[in-house]
Amino acid sequence: MGKHIVITGVSSGIGRDALRLLHQKGYHIYGSMRKKADAKSLTEAYPMRFTPLIFDVQDEDAVNQAAKLVFEACDRIDALINNAGVAVPGPLQFVTEADFERQMDINLKSVRRITNIFLPLLGTAHDFKGAPGRIINISSIAGLFTSPFNGVYSISKHALESMTDVYRRELRRYGIKVMAIEPGPIKTKIWGKSLNSMDQFADTDYYDILQKADKIIENTEKNALPVARTSNVILKCITKKHPKTRYIVHKNAFVFKIVANYLPDKLVDWLIHRSLSKGNRHRPV
Ligand SMILES: NC(=O)c1ccc[n+]([C@@H]2O[C@H](COP(=O)([O-])OP(=O)(O)OC[C@H]3O[C@@H](n4cnc5c(N)ncnc54)[C@H](OP(=O)(O)O)[C@@H]3O)[C@@H](O)[C@H]2O)c1
Image (tube, rainbow, N blue to C red; front, side, top):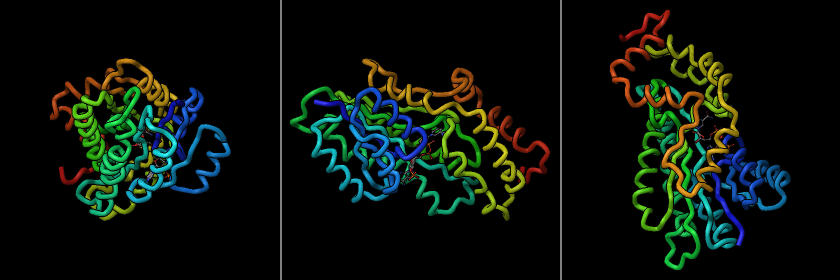
């Protein structure tokens, strides 16, 4: 019996590189994408041990339809990697209800829907045989620390952290291990997708600060880690006998942990306010 892994969002970035590494390690990858063109080019790149699953994570019927391919091909999977995600930027006060819902649906609610579909193959089926599988949720350091103007994304990832804990504690009876990976900035397309997105808030009190967003995105992307750093941690989550429950992937994970966990809120509020309002008449204060 082969080794099988389901990954959402393999068309680019972290998902695509996870496909590269895990395929190299001998797994058969069932990778999801939205566009047929991506399915075609990836099938050409990986003619063996790769099955494209075409769906938008928001479309439950399409996910169910694609999942049938996996259920027909295997009676267990080694891992489900919930990776597909987007980042909706903007001040919480002004992000539209539709954008807020889209962020929550893609980054959070779809993870529950997709996980529940694949749970029987991970170990909850009554006639399940073999070693239980693992669930790896690609969260973010934004799930541990909240930055302003990236708040909707941060809320979705904080909730994903909680969802990871809930599943881990509930699924323990089946032996299914559940982990979160929390990357800091990683060089992928996600950054470019947020460029020029702040103009929609041009009439708000925040625009003086938001105008700096593109510069900040460009600088962050420049200093971002290569995507392979995350893939190596994903592999560890799948293969280690006793994996940790969370893995931070960050240039300076230790300092990040101190800031996120030990500095008083009011000090962090002040530091963020000071760095954002430098050179601005920041209103309201
Ligand atoms: N890059 C970072 O710095 C960073 C840091 C922390 C966490 N993360 C997390 O890592 C994950 C992957 O992001 P990435 O950086 O690799 O970004 P990316 O290159 O933009 O890849 C995002 C992936 O998600 C897919 N996706 C987006 N919306 C979807 C939908 N509605 N249905 C199905 N698939 C959808 C995309 O497919 P399409 O090509 O069809 O759009 C793409 O395959 C995300 O969950 C993100 O939050 C990234």
